Image 1 (tube, rainbow, N blue to C red):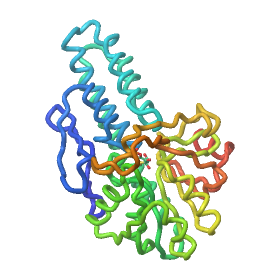
Image 2: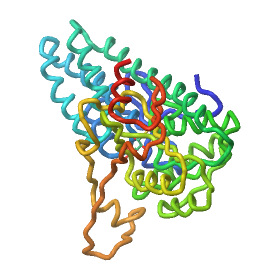
Image 3: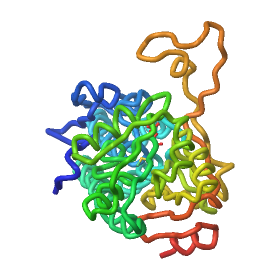
Length: 347
Ligand code: MRU
């Protein structure tokens, strides 16, 4: 059910095809792209038509349905071996968000158990991954909002909203629930260079929901904190290591440092599907490097001197020691460390 403060779906399965809200076109244009083959889904993930860790995983799961349909039609006896190329292409689309391979592994387990035409069982699994994500976000919204304490303003970075998930959002789920409960007065949204997810996506979601939002340049966040203007920084995650280190959109680490310096609390909100217990620390998280053009141009116009070299990591790693609260649908971990993460994930 879509409630008042959650009006958009980025990923939709409709009439035997995957429809993705083209997030490159927001906020000007709301248009869905209809995809019917798995390679298009991998391309859409690579090209940022769909983005945000959980949404990428959900889109990939539906991509497997499209792949299975094509491979089974091609060769009903050999579809299982042929689909491995599609799974590999989907898995390679983006490296940092672990939700992508997590969702593909779930689909692979169904593939291994399925005899005959796999389309229906795989579609059921993809839908389940999608529905479970929305339910997890609702639960995290409750758990995270319960931590907020006194009414005040919060700061968020990138987009961890309905657009980045199956619906409702992780960090924005907590903010939506906190706003409903009267605990969030205003949301400060970093614009989030270079893709401007904060300006184009988070502000768009919040304005649509009637939640007061103030946009700021990424470089203004520390100054905002120095004025005691925010009580919490609330962000999502792309991958969380076994010791609680967190990879998220580039700029998150700097926010965590500034938050600790100014006595502002720092909250990570992410489903258990974002936790990667196979890696000991954030040092092992693969960080996506993206094209130089993303920094050299803005809206297609050059903004840097010709010949400038570029460093453009899409994510950074915040050490667990800077995280005050990690909210998952399994529960809240305060001041996460390896022992607490192991307990959380064992439950
Ligand atoms: O490059 P993006 O837009 O996919 O990066 C997204 C983020 O960093 C989000 O904060 C993260 O995926 C959490 S989304 C619930």
